[in-house]
Length: 290
Image 1: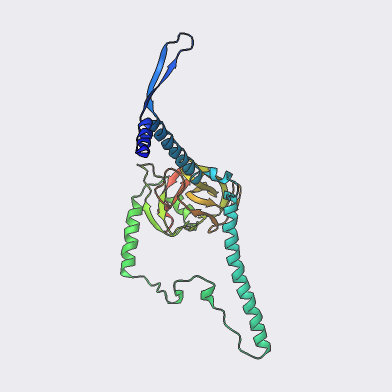
Image 2 (image 1 turned 45 degrees about the vertical axis):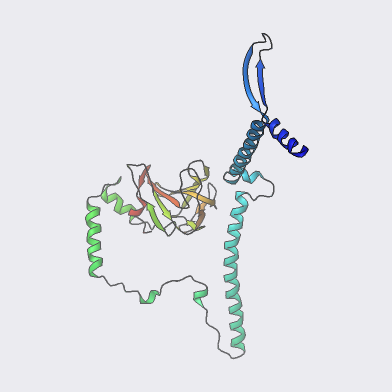
């Protein structure tokens, strides 16, 4: 009976009401008062603690502040790890070729037949290019006529002669292979295209040029901008990591970053790719086959 009374007394004390009053120290005028119970105070403190812990976790997990935690790798360290992984893969190929070369020399000395190089283990080839039929077909002719008809009435920032003389001499390298989910739209101020591809896919430079910006922005996350000849600029946004710094020289097809999901203006892992000519955006699909 005593235990039950103690329990009831304990819960009853939690619900006792108290009044917190704030007085003016000069006039002793009541400024503010608040009615409280021990249970309400306890619940408010617990909720505030959970909110503080959750906000701190989100802030550390999804912002560059996590790099300030001792033992957590910085962005530069992660980039070096990625580059080392690529170099190790290249070294494995070189070691394989060297060992094969030495084995073939030993085989020739012993009068045996040397082994052939297994190109499939070195080159990632998904097609047999010897069997490709390059003859034009009826469908090809129809497609060409449709493209010519669309190009005849297309509007661009450059006139047709200037466009043909400039862009026809350039070979644009696709930044990533994937599916275009959001196209170029001037009306909605979407000055590029969104490409969805494999997770952690490498992003490649579309032309030779110089990196003018490589860093973090609130809306686009990690991004890289490259200045190319002929007043062309390419922009790569929402990257998870960047491998180049401002001022670096890059070649067409060179790895510059990794596809990610950084920045506020993103709803999933993808690459936002833009092309600018003389300060005006142009549609990348007009010059690059994705």
